Amino acid sequence: MKPMQQTPKEPTPEEQRWRANAEDPARVKRHLKAQYILFGVWCALTIGWSVAAAYKVLAFEWTGILILSAGFLNIGIGIINNKRILAGKKPW
Image (cartoon, rainbow, N blue to C red; front, side):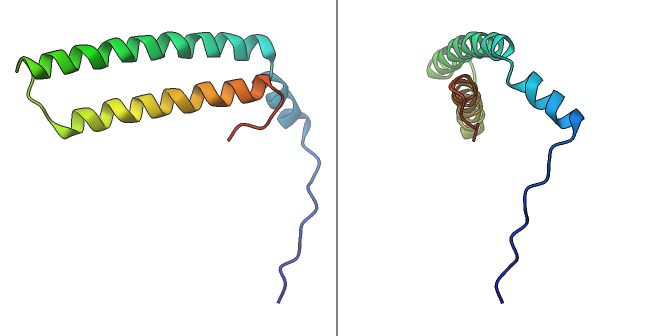
């Protein structure tokens, strides 16, 4: 049996306001700048953790690498999504 396709419903006025606010170019540029700053801070944190682990000031644990990698992934996806919004495309 073939599933029925639903027609897309019209967005409510509240949803239209939310979308307009989320896609505001000035707001997206501010968030993009903040994410680049956060990326730089995260890089500094990663370098500091690596040096501390190399000199055995901190214990080397795989959970640290996992947390740092997840942070980079999260920041990267945010940067990509904001660039896509600025380009007029849908975010992931």
